[in-house]
Image 1 (tube, rainbow, N blue to C red):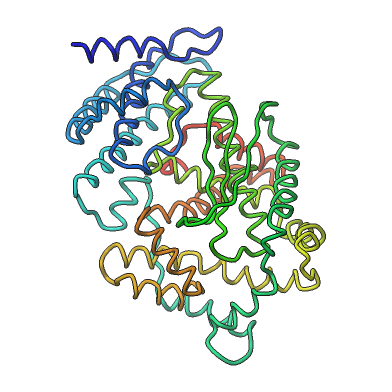
Image 2: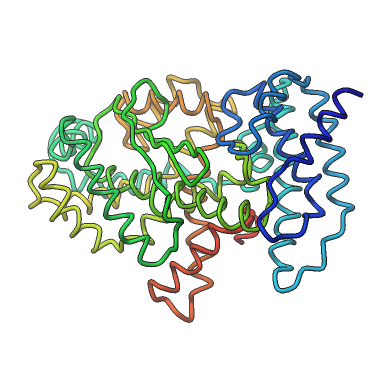
Length: 432
């Protein structure tokens, strides 16, 4: 009885947007947030961001609900959402329909993650479908081998191709003492381009830290109030193209803008509290990573990117800019090997190859030198099928947006559809 009273009191002290009527779905939203926080007590990676009622996090830590109890409550909430009728919304019925589907699918993913925490094992494809609402296509070794043959023609010389590739890239490493100035210039450019098309709150901001000992290359930690902390991992060499990639992906118009728009349009304007929490292992991640990766292409065309890096970032990094075009021609080929990482993860997680075999496979088909391949295996161990969210997510987002702007392919139309997607609860399956 004490627990139920406490929950009821806390549920009453939730955010209601100024001037809005109480949301009849508030109880649903509150229950969902509490369940995500409860799972976070069993999985340190699960709650990627939370900026709701701090007392709820404290209560989750105090209660530490057992996993079977979390699953039972999630099942009950799933049932309640399925039965619940949508309000008669004027002009935004589609958004409300997306909200209901979003909560249903996020809860199904939560239950799948809970079952994994209790020892249930899924294949790579089963897991990605359950957690991220999508399955990555399969690619054969022969497909990657064909791309690698073209790469070999671009990198003539003696020795294994991976060594020739690494030797080629050495000329494009950002010196450590130039990292900050290069990243700040990339961030400014990405932000300036984003603000031409996206209205952001005046108080939005983020800070950058350089870290080591991580399985990822960059991470956005959203903190609420339109603020982010972005961390860049410096364990391995950082090449010139990664500056703009990370600035767009983690910042503008990527993760930072995505979270800012969700907070502004769904949490503050509508009072939809479920978006104050972000469970990492959920369909939301495919949208987040897919839009962040595609955001680079939204902000810069290929020619614009090469020109900006050649004229601005290369000089700031004290790198010779005369080979910029050559570098990006090679990297365009390497980018076609993106799905090789998925294949390595699929085979590794499904037990077809061990860690050593996965490293060797990544060296051969993904053009990853051994240290980077070993770092990638650590990522597989920690995040498993999450890898599909980057490349499959980008492809799904690109196809979705380009299909919607077929009649008007202007940059403004692309930004409009991109911003609408960032501000919505659309699911991966809703991109098809």
